Amino acid sequence: LAGEAGTEELVMRPPEWYREHDIRLFTGVAIDRIDTGRRVVVADDGREEPFDLLLLATGSRAFVPPIQGADLPGTFTFRDLADTEAMVRWARERRRAVVVGGGLLGLEAARGMAARGLEVSVAHLMDRLMEQQLDYPAAEILKKEIEALGIEVLLEHSAGEICGSGRVEEIHFNNGAMRPADMVVFATGTRPETKLA
Image (cartoon, rainbow, N blue to C red; front, side):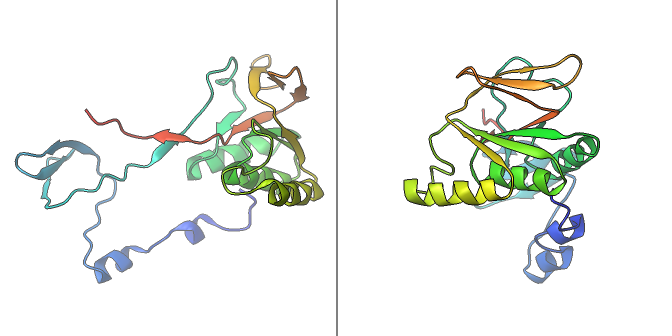
């Protein structure tokens, strides 16, 4: 997002790594069903793969709060490469971004947008940044470091509504505050990608 690494640098393991470790990797294949009686996984191309143990690691989707305007052009989630590419394209001709969420992902999104020259605010529901990882003194140090990057930190700010005529223009918070915005990035946690029946 900050433009400091190319997509080729983001690949965790090259294809040959899987071969060297006796892992059969199938990409671009969706799983249609799991037959627990026969102990096979059935792919959308009809292929069946037997298993002794089965681990479901289906990933997750970004959580977007159910607020008015969350579907306006200029709203984004920050979860994968497609999200990042869409944000970069949109940000090219924009000035102000608000990131909703002050956890690690939100701070990374804010830093990336600031590195691209946008005025950035981070709005966080809690009374300190990264409250799951940091105590109050450490969170205060982090807040000062984030602000030193030119990023505004808004604590105890819950997104209430995104407004705009055809695209994002401002975000209103439940505490009565408002910020103008050309884009809003949701970095507010995740939900499981797949539900099991």
